[in-house]
Image 1 (cartoon, rainbow, N blue to C red):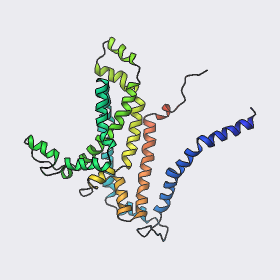
Image 2: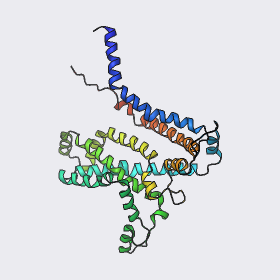
Image 3: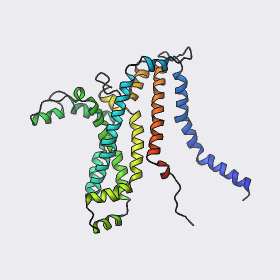
Length: 303
């Protein structure tokens, strides 16, 4: 095959296989960021009209928005707590537990744990609203009353813990599925050899299981971090960011400013902070977890 025809074929294959993906990437990822940047330098409001190009939105963020730093702090604690205790750690515990019991029992347990994920968001939110009801009708207070413990108003006494629990219990299911699949792909002879050598349960997990699922652990950490930074669905349904902005994460704050208050230009400017933080977090985790190695070509030669 001549060089021009080979080059033409490469261009054609690129257009057929990667062209649609590049188009979708531009339409749904790059173009919205460009539009957001443009809106942030205007005075677009509820009337959907802008009259001038200005940097007033950024000046407002720096000088007059007293809630900005608080929402960033809440977001940091929310993402760190949900990720560390549930999406990664608890998801890993669930996968280890369900892969060390009979297969049918493990499959049943995983199916039950996935029910909230498969249920409508409103149903999951209503379940939590019933559980944390501060009166004697709430499930948590019914249990506490039975144990002789005073009633507990989680919404007002521990709001940050509430949103971590709400998102953590449903978020752990993804890690559970990914980690379970990764654990089942580990060659069984490694476990047999370890047991023959006298390794115990915890030694097998530390020296065989965890090193073997390093890449799934890295993927879940990166993916869930970015997901938690921009998600607020359950927080909005259960607490609406209250009480007194105590559960208003940054993504919810952007939503409220833009769509509830009609401050579209200011909301766009705030969203740029979220985009910037997402890019920085991606780059840091890419570097820290050495994700580049995972995407390298395999070294196995195929003849």
